[in-house]
Length: 384
Image (cartoon, rainbow, N blue to C red; front, side):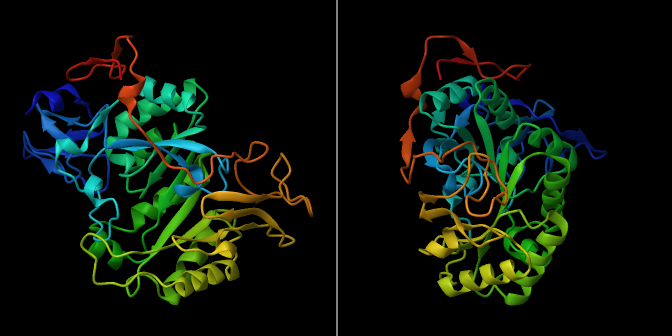
């Protein structure tokens, strides 16, 4: 194994040995079982020296300042900026993945930028970001790194956002989400067949995560459902999913229906028609979802937040730009006084649609920073 990978390994927290001598990873429902030197499906969790380690700690596929609406989160500090980053690897194998160069990477060259948790928090603060987002690939697979970054962020008053498929076991789920302020959960479909055939996973663990987040945490959650023509876009499936959301999670969880574009291994399907998204949104509203949106298409009505009581436009949007604001500082409709569910903090931010790549090495300081607290396999010192 090369020196760089050795320098970024830290012990995994969730695994055990099984009777045949292999180690079983207990982080996600895949329960990968590995011999010495082998990695799980996610690629970044490997058996080294007879224990499971995370091999991508402190390394990223890139950093970028984004609008919070890009996650997408429409009800969490609207208009503000978040410092976004991911690592490499994923614990699902979605054939339509639009970040496949990162999430399916098996190359260390993908991890081009390095940063300690403290540096990420400091840079977010210096860049004027209200939050840090774990995105591009699923933070579940860099569990230990994400938690340490979240703790460093909270010490500086920075919020944390997880963009995740929610495919995680119960114990690490509780540990992870204790440190998360908001999450967008990608509910990829509402059938076991789709999850098994297209994603290489199962539906129920994702539903369990959503119920857990809503009922047992204070994490603000929104849901994204990417509609793929001929795969998961039937009226029947949208009916079933939206009814489940209202019955199990309540009417106030925002639901984003987004357009599919052919990518990676699923290029034989057309892009999602705008009419399909609009229909899904109407079905959701009919079934009691108070905040239903369309995404990846130009649809001002589908991007606007409306008061569920009087119908007034509360937050107008043009893409990722907030164009209208009719909420009181407490998040109530200025027309009728009804509360709009979400996390609001006075007037919206003004970051807009800008996307600003950031090189963490530009923020190097001379202080000797170890990768993380605790007892890693090997330690490293860096200004980043």
